[in-house]
Length: 461
Image 1 (cartoon, rainbow, N blue to C red):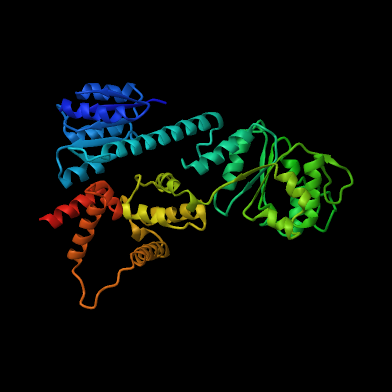
Image 2 (image 1 turned 90 degrees about the horizontal axis):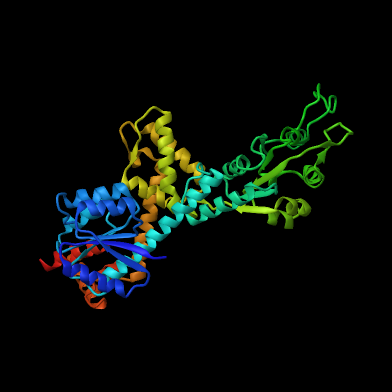
């Protein structure tokens, strides 16, 4: 695929230099624009992968121009190249959504590295956007929030199996959204006009679960004053969702196996077989294979229900989905409680992304509902989060710093040391090791290029 890069600069020499850099890269088409109208025209009507600009655009402020581009296509990366080496300009550009900020003249490889990263990000973003659009148009899975590769894989599998009548086994930790996936499969299946009946096998006592699933005849036991259909019969023509099937006792497992194999059952206290046409979706937060090995779950039933397994990953393994989920929940709760859409502070976003979320999406949802209730203004801050969550985040941050110091293995001398002198030493050593390449030097110290440049200017004053 050819990547289209729009270049705008008031110096023709710079454009020629950029073209020379791109000549060494494959599958890149460079297009040039010199005024606001033509730039906006390109963004609006052409398929672009990257903009490289000096932001000196006639008739419009540099940051206003950047805002306009990002409002039209928020995911379009913009690399700013400029002779202005001030920290303030760099910071403002990054705040307005610039992908990178590079000063002229270009250091060896600086621009090509930035271009490579930007094009890779754009390609992944466009691929995810296209894939989600296709999934939602075909399967309408819009209620499942997330763009991570792992959740997109779940959507693909759910979409593939929804048009079949196959038995599905959804597994994942508690709170990951297993029932949400089961509902999406049902309502996008050929059985969507039929009922979706759910039952949590862990929530009912052993004797009650059997009567709830298979129903009973009048007089089958004390209190059975009339005939009652079970969940299998109620789901006839539709789907039965058996949540936490691992908690089902062996005698009930044997009867469920019969329904799966023969599509018929007998009510408690009954002698006649009742035919049922039901699609079964099962779920569990336990490792059912281990249960089979321990003799806690029937092997034959396991293989009957494990026809099409779908694994929902825990939230901590798809951190890129945390903020999209957060914004969706905050929007829902704000509207429900009659509040204006609330925003989150940057610190809150960091805490949410770095948290472990042992309770997964359900825990995140509960945390945000509490935060919306407590928030009296228009900004959710750390004071609206559970104390334990904030404390764990701070503890993790401190541990991270400790590990870094341990890795460096630095021993403070008895006479002490000047922090400023240490910083100067590290900055100069990083420059030396990187052969004066500021981007590489910044990486060696775990800093952004702008922060490194600021520290370098500070020690040279």
